[in-house]
Length: 241
Image (cartoon, rainbow, N blue to C red):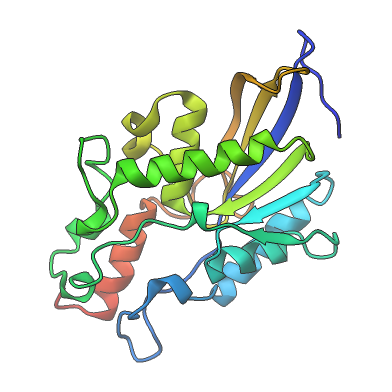
């Protein structure tokens, strides 16, 4: 779907999704050893299916997903029946903490509020990935997608942390706004990017919608932040934490 801004710029639209609900606790009530491979829960699959139905009239012409299974599964369910291939892209995989200490965390506040210092130079996510380095990786990947002029409406399915980086790019706030943005499971954000019709240079970025979840539009269902929810599940599974 070709869109044109008032000044003649080409207006392209990105629907930025977070993956659906997952659990980092296994059937034995133990924290999973590898969070990168967890699948969606039944509720996560239902969220993605509902989202796909709600956006059935959106003319997606390209779909890109983080290579993690939870994002690929979410993208596949949202786009079910459209005949669009989901492209896996490692540029959009989620932050990873220090694997050597992942299961040794005893203060769940460290996890629940792991994003609070993202804007501090040199800060790392739970002792692992650098916020600055992941931000550079994500924005580079995004700008490569924008440099390709073969699409007008993109479905980009990633993660809570990654989406915050993309929104920071769109707001021109970078990591300064990172800790103030939340992303519910299977939410979507709408970002328009205007480019020069001849050079393809970015003219402006417009944020149309943030953290819209079709199953809880008014945010009545849960008052907890996304990382608080993960920490709460861990506390319930292992009460001593």
